[in-house]
Image: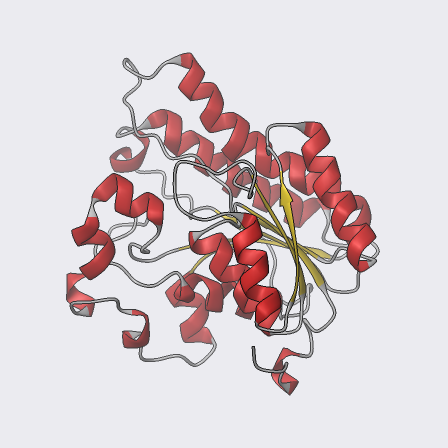
Length: 285
C-alpha cells in the first residue's frame, strides 16, 4: 500500500465504517480509503466463522488491507440486529478513537414482481436496504457530529420517478429509493453540524459477485466496469469538506468527470465503453 499522498491528507487518520464490506463495491471502497490513510471498520454478515453464499469475508478484506500496510478491523454482524449495529459503531470508536465516515453499502437485491414476492422477502429488502442504512447512520450520528470531517455516503440511486423503474420491481425500487430519500433528509437535518450526506450510484454495471450471480459471467466480465470506479468516486466525495457537497444523488462518472477524469477505459474489464450494460434507475438519455 502506497503512503498517503498530500492530496489524501483529508482522510489520513480518519475512521470510516463501511457496511457490506466483505466483497465488491464495499471492499473496493475500504481498500481505497485505507490506501489514503484512513482507518476502516468492515461490517458484514460474512466473517471467517460465518461465510456467506458468495465468496469473500470481512476478515479476508481486513487481512488484505493490513498486509498492504493499512489499518483495518473486521466486524461480522447482521445489519438487521440493533445490537450488532451498535456494536460495530462502538468497535470503530474503541479501536480508532473516533468515527468520521459511514458508508451504507450493504443491500439486498430482489426484483420479484409484486404478486409473486413473499412478505418475508419484502421484509428482508426493507430490513437491510431501508432500515439497515438508517439504523447504522442513526447509531453513528452522535459520533459524527463531533468530527470536523463527517460524511454519510449511501450507495443508492438518483430518484428517477419513471414507470420503467417504479413498475418493474416495486418492492426493490421503493427500498432503494428510500435510501436516497434518507440522504436528502439527513443532508437537511445535519447541515449545520455539519455532516455531509450524499448518495452514489454506478452509471453502468459494476462487476460484483452479485452481478455475476444474477446477470451472468458475460455481463460481469465484458459488459461491466471494475468496482474501482465506485471506490475512486467515493474517495472524491469523502475527501471533500462536508460543507462543499451535501444532499446530492450522484453517479460515479459524474463525480470523476468533475474531478478531471476524462478517460474511463482503465475501469473496463473487457469489451468497449459502448458494450457496457447500463445501470438501473438512471433517467433515459
